[in-house]
Image (cartoon, rainbow, N blue to C red; front, side):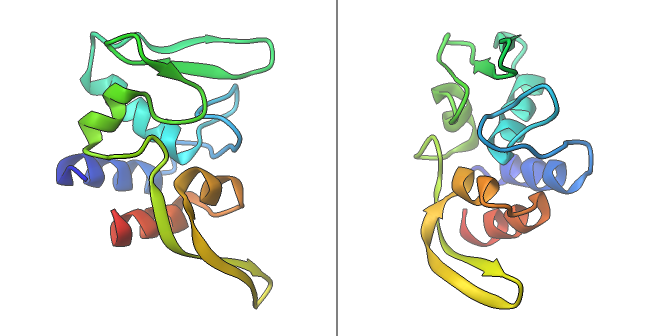
Length: 131
């Protein structure tokens, strides 16, 4: 992963600026961890369309400068800018917890970690360690 982009992403996830949601890159109330990366991309790429119109269901697609778009995973332009090989990066070592009991430990993706209840702070730790 691009070191500069990684640091910006880690800073953004820890900033408190973004409300965390799951199931989509962005909705009317906030962003998933991948949506935060898309938002950072938009700040540096004025030719990108960025966040498209929000539908009545509250889902917003992100559109890069090449017209590639998605509402669940990283569009091609964002992925390449960040130096990632996957539109939803695989990660290992995720441990799902229920109280103090480990219920599951397996490889997964960042979006699944986000949607499984991991906070942006915990996701930032995973990104720092694994990407």
